[in-house]
Length: 366
Ligand code: TLP
Image (cartoon, rainbow, N blue to C red):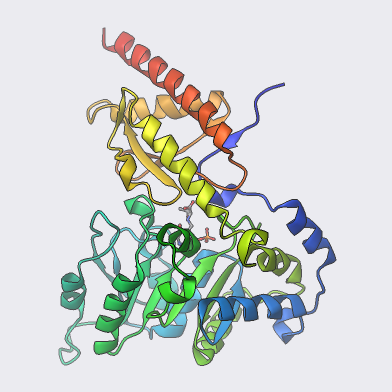
């Protein structure tokens, strides 16, 4: 029998647990556009309570969670201040521009995934100058994907929140993987989001739900986000079938899916430690692996593109999937369904893929 596929392209590939599937089948349902679905209402109340916010909204995706948040916060012609490679500006089909009508003023991340607070200060526009767009929102991404999933701590979030408040604009956190940050930092989501006016987080990544994200914030903000969700066609009907797994994911302790993320972090760290020892792997400092992302390069700068493609092909033939990532990198993401023993198999395949890549390129150069 061929080996099981090990899909490390993303934590979005996780399948629901058997308990989640049963809960989906048995969920009590109603029409959520009429606010009649008791399972959705229970999930939204649980999310609000867990994050320490007044209210919550269930949305189909993280992208829609960010988009409705932007629509609720930012008037047409406003400007968002965000990290240069944040998902909101890099990976959401320019929804901020196309749908919200907002420009983005971007600031590069430092190695720890944060933006320099001085640069955030400097990014604000002069509201008295008619040439300039109006600064309307500051966004953070936690964990921060392009810096290899770095968790941003509560003190940093509070510092940025204070800058935003001083300038009279709200702070939104794209917390697609906020629970990975919670586990990595040994804190609570309430504390991590204390300084945020709003946040979105995904149920469909490491928490293993098949679909769905949640937006949290003040009641009046959530009302505007609800209208925005309707405008986008995201008002859903008997959607308790999708909210039911979320209630399992967000349970406290070992009965939920949050604590379990620690295993993914351990697996990612071990993968990185051993990968970084292999000849042909570049740009990987395993001590920087703090959550479930491992980013690295294959081959030198000159031959890297061909080597990366050959490496990924060889892995795929072995039933292991990783994905190309910006700046010539490869991304491997650990998640529910990838066990410690699977990491050994991934490493064996990486070793033989690297040997093959070296031979092939050697042959073509000769
Ligand atoms: N990220 C996906 C891809 O879109 C890149 C992934 O595989 O990492 N915020 C952040 C920080 C995200 O990483 C993602 C998804 C989203 C928002 C959007 O979530 P979805 O995919 O549910 O729209």
